[in-house]
Length: 356
Image 1 (cartoon, rainbow, N blue to C red):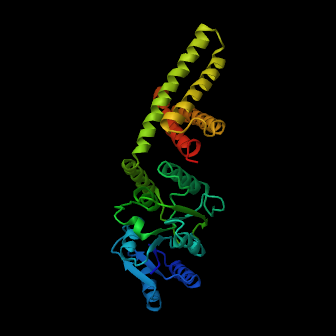
Image 2 (tube, one colour):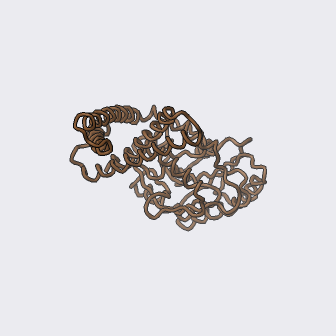
Image 3 (cartoon, rainbow, N blue to C red):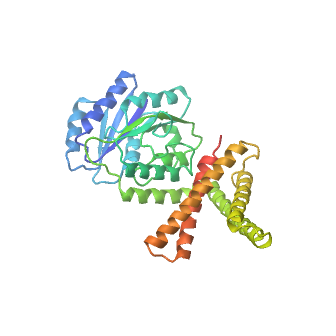
């Protein structure tokens, strides 16, 4: 068996027959020796009965029925345990992921160009259709936080293939909806290929995403820190550099205003630019360990953009916490600084100082 694709289901009676037929059709059309494994969490809508009927005529269809709704990630792992393919995959049941892209994900693994291929919404050629602003923002924030741990552009994708040998002894134990980030962090020596896909919001059925999945993601991210100690080191160094920059900023502001008599606004601009420049060079050389000459002008500009954005975020949250929620302004500023500092770190890590 070449390929085993797992599809977790819960209340997918309107989609299940269609997705099964489309995936198996792709196997046949592209001459892939594949099997489709459906893991159903005791769907009360009759999904299981439909699968029983489909299994009678489809030898390449395997159905696993679990006793309760135990979660998408655990369903994927249960499916992978019985998979016979040399390559393992996962995709959604609601036709959000295009089955015709299976071959584009499979070919790089077959040729040895990669050992994991990801259907990406966030590389050139990829896009999302049918999501509202709220859903897009949630996805972008989750992706932004996840990219602290990986350079993959869409680490929250639910559509990917990976060679079975890569996950062996990886100790996968994800919670919530997403398993890809767990694979990227815990599996060693991955050769990654991202393939652009068009993600289409489900037409039938109800999305299972909710606040619980957001909380699961945050718990996962906190747990992943022990696997990425460099992230902790960078975060601490970034904080030290930021504290140094604040001291430089205040010192120059005082000297220019009190000793040289400059207008305080002009002093503030100069002190901000000097402190920002100091932060840039220290972070480039010490925090993120880059050679000083690598794209220095471009990266300085990026650093300035992120720093300015963080300043605006700081002021915005300071105003909201103080004026809207009535929090004492010094407490508001402390919270706003923490939020802006975190965004500053993430922005510079994944944008300014990303590996080239």
